[in-house]
Image 1 (cartoon, rainbow, N blue to C red):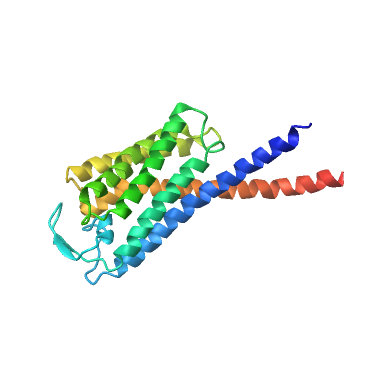
Image 2: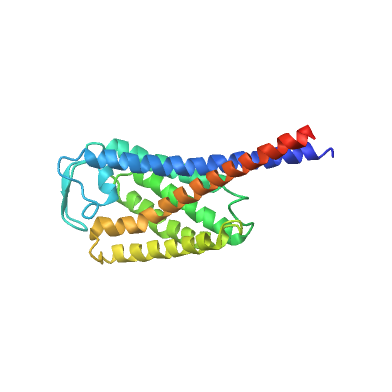
Length: 240
């Protein structure tokens, strides 16, 4: 019995870390899409999800861009967008680090998946610190971390998630990762399938964000439900 209080504290600490991890993912993704909307609405010429890259919102200078498709870029809120990229990246790494245990198996596949998902966070940080028109090489490296290694991590996550996660969500995670990797290949080969350059890039980059948001919201709701169910039993136990 002497060791029980320590075990309880360890378990509670794990639950707190898990909630922080889920919350980090939610805050990171939500702030990104909010800032994305603010930054695109500031454009004098309408910003297009089909014609414009995501990184166009973070470009520091107004200029005509020819590659990979001709377009005029002028993002007044580029500074805000780049801060959002960095914030998202940091919070993705935090979430990957803190969601162990309940969400992930104790396996090599799970460890590799978390590492690759964290690399996507590093990619967003690199992209935010180096706008495409300031340091293209670093920005491209960040994009590779996001849409290559990050999406491979999403594929592997389907095999690394704990069995407490429903099977359809695990298989859906892998399918989402395969879809994103396929879209990245199509984006690199300039095959946009009618979605436009920016549209195909989003199919490659956004699935990981939508997945992190969905998994985190589900996890927090389930934990809140369990706490609500446990509380009456604890009161009855004390009364007995």
